[in-house]
Length: 197
Image (cartoon, rainbow, N blue to C red; front, side):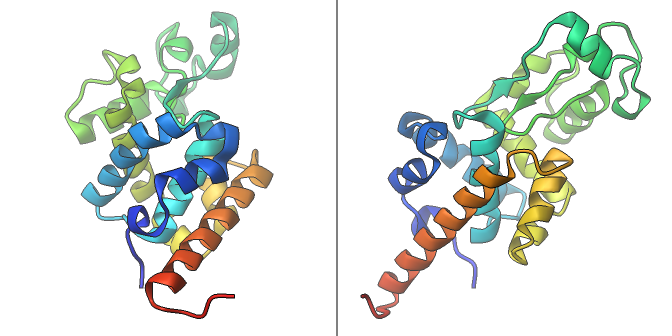
């Protein structure tokens, strides 16, 4: 049976598992927002929470929403003119660069997620840096890409690929997942009166 990770793994333990990528003040401020967003969209299970925490640790490096770094030329080359991202106007690459806990990119994604939340992200992309909005984007992204289901079957490589498109950061991601699973299982044993060594 799945359970709410806030019961299973304390914030202090989450921070310890993430190390420098999970400063306690950022985990304390942002994890409840992410947890609430996962619950709002009906996907808050222990495996999905573990996937979210590990993803945020790898994607942001600080457990807070971030903006993709680079200059206008970099973003023009990487994202301008990409129909798959809905980038139809010059400068769209820089304007709609990656932001948030998961790096949504492109006019199309900013429009889609903004519409789903009732927020005009296309007109003001930096709203994706607001922790509450970034948390909802992550939850919607996880739901839309069935990441909750992959996490629920321990398909951790699939979780990483669906967020990143590949396995960038895989070593850290898997280490965080393993640490969170061990912590959740250890606390569940204690709560049910399981045998302790």
